[in-house]
Amino acid sequence: MANLVTNCGFSPSPAVKAHCNSPSYGHNFIRLQNSKSSTSSLNLKSSSKRSNKLYVTCASTSVQGQTQTPLTGSQQASGHSSSKPKKVMVIGGDGYCGWATALHLSNKGYEVAIVDNLVRRLFDHQLGLDSLTPIASIQNRIRRWKSLTGKTIQLFIGDICDFEFLSEAFKSFEPDSAVHFGEQRSAPFSMIDRSRAVYTQNNNVIGTLNVLFAMKEFSEECHLVKLGTMGEYGTPNIDIEEGFLTITHNGRTDTLPYPKQASSFYHLSKVHDSHNIAFTCKAWGIRATDLNQGVVYGIRTDETAMHEELSNRLDYDGIFGTALNRFCVQAAVGHPLTVYGKGGQTRGYLDIRDTVQCVELAIANPAKPGEFRVFNQFTEQFSVNELAKLVTAAGAKLGLDVQTKSVPNPRVEAEEHYYNAKHSKLSELGLVPHLLSDSLLDSLLNFAVQYKDRVDTAQIMPSVSWKKMGAKPKTISV
Ligand SMILES: NC(=O)c1ccc[n+]([C@@H]2O[C@H](COP(=O)([O-])OP(=O)(O)OC[C@H]3O[C@@H](n4cnc5c(N)ncnc54)[C@H](O)[C@@H]3O)[C@@H](O)[C@H]2O)c1
Image (cartoon, rainbow, N blue to C red; front, side, top):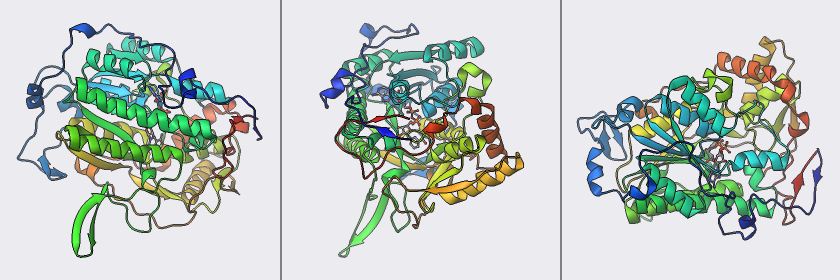
């Protein structure tokens, strides 16, 4: 694959060129579904709402000093202490994690609204990429869901960097929880060139800041569930704790935010998000859960498997594809598994069915007003070499001859290192993990084989170098 450098830069919208203005996706928001309450009739929430949240004191689980009985999603969705279903705004609900989560929560009885500017689909057009699986438009996805289940998902199309749009969405929907997946989430994308680095940090940091302001202004009781990443911590030579580290220094002891050593402009945007969220919890009493998620794999959830129009996206390319999903697609098309460098890079991983479960648990057991919680959201650790071995063995059982090749590492990262990250808080709330098993690998590989004719093998090799990135706009092409 060649990188063609052209003079056409990345521009999801004209506003991005102005760097710190909102990269608005062109139009203000569109609602697919008529809301029961009109925007104009809505008021700021009163603090009396606070009493609707249920905290049970005779409890079994301690979350950051708070004693609670973990609630299941359905208990929370049904209101538990009131008859109205709980409302969840899923920001980024057209994306890989967000779509699966929106359907899962809707299925569990939550009233769901998706907020998305569809920019992820635009990235594919601009970079010449595509999901392994064909994906229906968001409108058709939601219509199909309604026709199969009778359940309505509201849709707000717009950019959360556009505060006016976001304010209207908050005032109209009045969420009890906002799950925020709506960011540019690829490290390689953020390292293509200067314009993508600036776009990523602008989109992610300003978008999250707008969500925090919208919560303060229009939904002060709303619980923010924000998707962070385990990549914020980097790979320190000590155990990684869940968000906080107790340190004794010169005879004094304090519990401080765990040091962050992010290794791309994308990961750095997440670090800044975390700081902004922690600050607003303290300053404004925002309630927030930062989910430091590991690498997600898999495609099917109970809901997305219900119809092909509900199918989720699966990225296998060198920019948006993530390790295990990529390896399964590479194995299916007979491409050697692309291990970067020595392959000792170890990270936390989780099945997409656990992503939706973790988010549901976080929503059902919300942070207290003013509380900034951090959960490490993954279920198992693997090195890249271990994943390659697992996929090779699973491929052999399906008659696939899977080879592995070490390719020069395009990233700047340790290729052999200590890694031991804690991840007990979601288990304490009731997470029952789907561990990576032969059967999951078989089904993922079979899925990849089913769609292998859609694979563009030219997109498989990494095309973005951490060291070679520059200010010149770059067009990735074949
Ligand atoms: N996929 C993973 O393995 C993984 C791992 C760790 C953390 N995460 C985090 O989870 C979240 C979701 O990841 P994903 O894989 O589903 O990503 P994705 O790119 O598939 O989905 C993100 C969605 O957000 C939307 N979006 C982006 N910017 C927006 C904006 N300004 N306004 C409105 N919508 C916007 C996109 O259009 C897209 O639909 C991200 O924050 C990511 O950092 C993902």
